[in-house]
Amino acid sequence: MSGIPYKLDGLDGDNEVRAKFTSFYASMALSKGDAVCIDVATSTNGIGNHITQADVDATATKQAIGIAAEAIASGDVGLVQVGGVCTFAKLDAVGATAPGDLLGAATTAGELAIQSAHNVAAVAINLIENVAGTDGTADCTVYLLNPLNL
Image 1 (cartoon, one colour):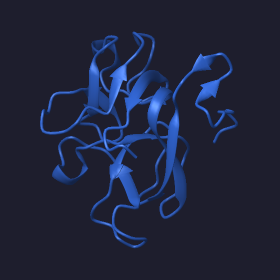
Image 2 (cartoon, helix red, strand yellow):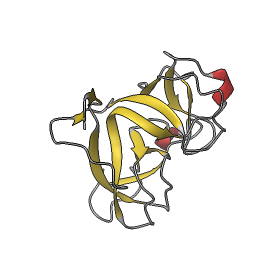
Image 3 (cartoon, helix red, strand yellow):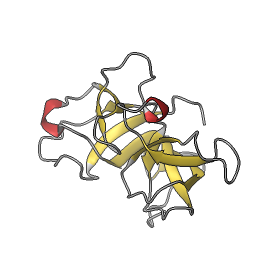
Image 4 (cartoon, rainbow, N blue to C red):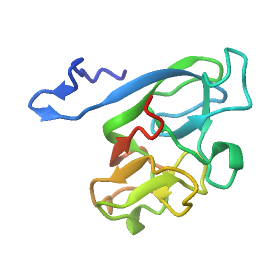
């Protein structure tokens, strides 16, 4: 995973990050930082083994589960961060988010935004005032909550 060493005990040097990763098949090409969800429409490698970009406007993709930790080609297996501090999330409306905001899938596929739909679980908590960030750029820091306990 992009050369960032994480120990198995969840520690990165002196900082506890509780980072947790899992692997999935990609149903589409994904970029590092994309908010992803389980793709229930694809069963090529078994039901529940595929991911696609999360999008709150589509019923089947509104529950984000984590952030793509690397670029993943369609059909390939790749890492998804589902828990802990993530420094490469894509946010929509970056300037509107504040530390402590609950985040879920945005109306822009592959991005997170302030949680507005109450029929899905929040996937992250915004950690840093990302005013210097750019919408859709993998440069925001969030704490992933692992809503599906993966």
